[in-house]
Amino acid sequence: MMTILSPNTWTPGSVEARVHRYATVAGFDTVGFAEAGPVDPETAENYRVWLENGYQSGMEYLEKRVEERLDPRKILPSAKSVVVVLSNYYRENPSEDREIGKVARYAGGRDYHRVVGNQLRELKRRIEEESPESESWYSVDAGPILERYWAQKAGVGFNGKNTLLINTRMGSWTFIGILLTSLELRAARPHADHCGTCTRCLDVCPTEAFPQPGVLDSGKCISNWTIEHRGEFDEEMQPNLNGWLFGCDDCQTVCPWNRHAKPTPHSDYEVRSPFRSPDLSVIAGMKYEEWDEATRGTAVRRATYPGLVRNAKALLKEK
Ligand code: B12
Ligand code: SF4
Image 1 (tube, rainbow, N blue to C red):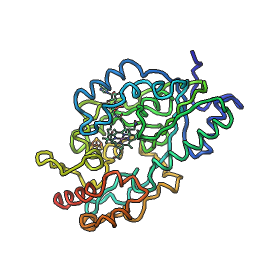
Image 2 (image 1 turned 90 degrees about the horizontal axis):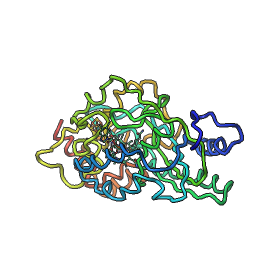
Image 3 (image 1 turned 90 degrees about the vertical axis):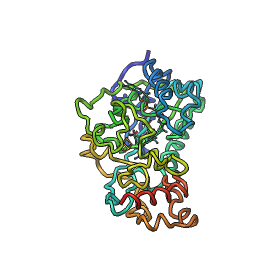
Image 4 (image 1 turned 30 degrees about the vertical axis):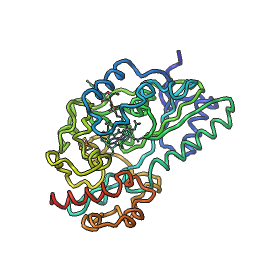
């Protein structure tokens, strides 16, 4: 059984302190460690029930590699620890205006998959340089792993009623990165929940996408519609996009834990000009080449060309 420590109380010179320093030098804002193993039975059951309810909507990949999602040692059999890193992306949203399309705060700058991915690669390199016998694996977003679950386990935040990981210092405006390692790192104390009786995120959601606190029905979420959904919007489901051209931040903007969020220190996340005040008519009439140029290197590309144009046209109809 590993000793339980609070985050950031590593003994100077210890392997934990060194990994912590490497993560900080790589550019991360917070780091925590958890013991690798199967997720707790309640979480595993919740995940299965979530799928049975069809809350993954069209995201069929969430039905795949379930065994890995529920036990990271199925990804890296030698894994002893889960290193969780956070990267603050908060910025004022310059496009929060109904006359123009709103782009979620996480998406208008350099694609976080690249930024956080490069930093994780550097962290892996430093760890393996120091411990050549060790093995590691990393992922940001795309890997078959419940990132928010591990973040709470590693003590870097708690999962709010909006399902997002909330760090008490940075709020929920953080990306999560995961590195599995065969090194044995002393685990942090899992973070306690701090939502209390607050239900602002549940109440504000324009599409009532939360069947219950902490559970999201993706089939109703604007973020899913505007980013992941392919093809035209369903007639019956012709959504109220609430002004969102890409993604949705409504259930985060109202969260009291986000009141004191500090702007990101990372220039990579600075919003690029096409997404500062995106003119809906311009986006709706974009040619493929223009979309290609505007979205290159950003997470907005995930919506695809027909998807982004569809979103702009739907918003123009809503106005
Ligand atoms: C699929 C996905 C989505 C989907 C589904 C979101 C979701 N809540 O699951 C869609 C496209 C909707 C989406 C939207 C967004 N996403 Co997203 N997404 C993911 C992804 C790739 C997988 C998440 C997943 O596994 N979901 C499956 C469900 C089952 O997982 P879960 O919510 O943890 O499930 C638990 C609960 O449902 C609960 N549960 C189920 N039944 C019951 C019953 C009871 C009684 C209880 C108490 C609990 C309970 O138990 C389940 C198991 O733990 C992760 C990256 C990753 N690999 O983790 C990023 C990730 C979660 N997304 C992220 C972001 C930034 C967003 C957006 C904010 C983007 C935006 N601005 O538009 C929105 C937020 C919408 C929201 N409120 O969740 C970040 C979140 C960072 C953070 N601080 O939390 C992540 C971690 C990516 C990253 N690496 O940074 N996303
Ligand atoms: S991202 Fe928007 S639509 Fe999705 S749950 Fe949050 S408030 Fe609702």
